[in-house]
Image 1 (cartoon, helix red, strand yellow):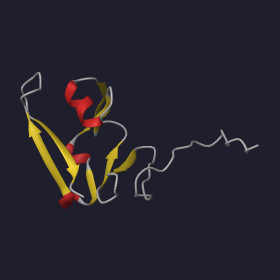
Image 2 (cartoon, helix red, strand yellow):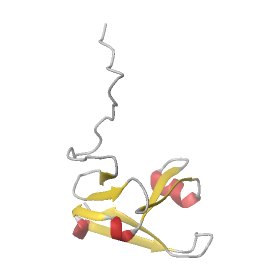
Image 3 (tube, rainbow, N blue to C red):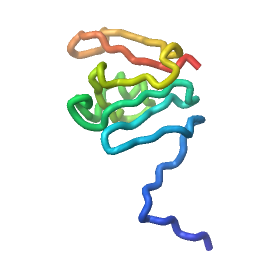
Length: 109
């Protein structure tokens, strides 16, 4: 019989190729799947502006899921640790209810 997991410690399985992510009480990092791009961002205000779940068609299409868990960060609080030059963008306003431009960033690798 397998040993049971230690439930006193949080378990977050590694995903993707990057293994150098970190978080503190007020900042965290995120990487693309291959690990080429890494960002650092605040986990509280004033830099963290909003957190929300979205069920719109665009978010479902981008995530291949029934919803996306999103957050917005003020630009001046976002730090590109590596790979900023590897980011590509796609922007459109056709399917956005407000008709404002929505831009998504993707790792080109």
